[in-house]
Image (tube, rainbow, N blue to C red; front, side):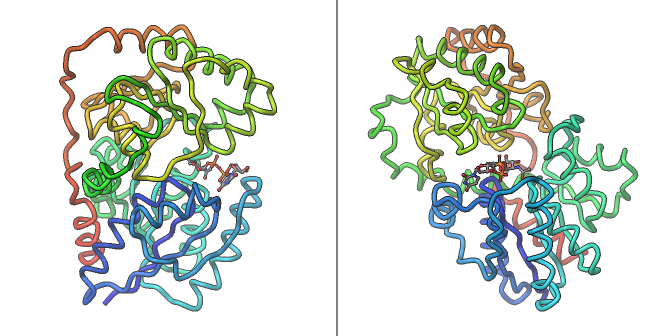
Length: 364
Ligand code: UD1
């Protein structure tokens, strides 16, 4: 029986950890899983609703660190997490993704000699101005078991000198959650509430500091969305950081009376119901690039780079940057072209990654 601390902190962690916890509980003779929520995200809409939608049990430990600068947030997580590790003496800590909670908890365990498994290892944007890229590089450097979602990630890790024995290609656990919940999401009434017909609207999300923290960049992106909004409604569930900046930069007027509809962040099932029926998704999210690929929905990524190239090579994703003209022409091209996409689902994005993660932990 191995005792595992599973770390969650921010919104994109919840759908990755849910299938792992479910599988560990199913194999109760082999695993004693515990959940640590760092509290990096704390709003009901950014956190609690995901526990309910995804059926994640109550966390065993809640560190309640909240928002702060990167250094302060990372340090607070480390200070609050260290006593938990000392008391619980886990055999493994499982961290997912690339948020501050990921690196903070990995660093604590590395110093205490507790084994670390990193789920979604090896992704690289090669853009070190992204906080997530720093978190990815450092977490991978100190993890004992690197569990990857695609083979390009294995190649990145090998090129950084990580021994092949530590790397295991297990597939994409986030896609486990997509397939597990797709049917359930049909009970959501979000499309009816927003009065939307399937394939007759676009969905957008924006929250990266590089896109929303500078007025000119954010204004250009909103202008591009307004142009798309002339063709069809653009539904925009707004991250708290983005909401704050739209208001403080005085940009709210730009989208007033346009086809862009700002709404509050949605829960997992409502959001799945929304994007799964969209004609087009425009986003700077990492996870949504993968989710749209899994469901064959056209996606424009409003960034200059992506750590998820497989979604472009095999899937429905296209990298268009942040120039408003480029975004508009790419969006119009998709809206005018009705032919079905030739997209493929990447290897091992099959809904069974959590099983392979558990196998890898037992075998290590
Ligand atoms: C974090 C992750 C990012 C991930 C994103 C998903 C890091 C470095 N970044 O970015 O990779 O894509 O989560 O959402 O870990 N806030 C609230 N309520 C909340 C949480 C945040 O109002 O529940 C506001 C606060 O003003 C806070 C700001 O959002 O200062 C940013 O939150 P933070 O967790 O620092 O980073 P995110 O931008 O959410």
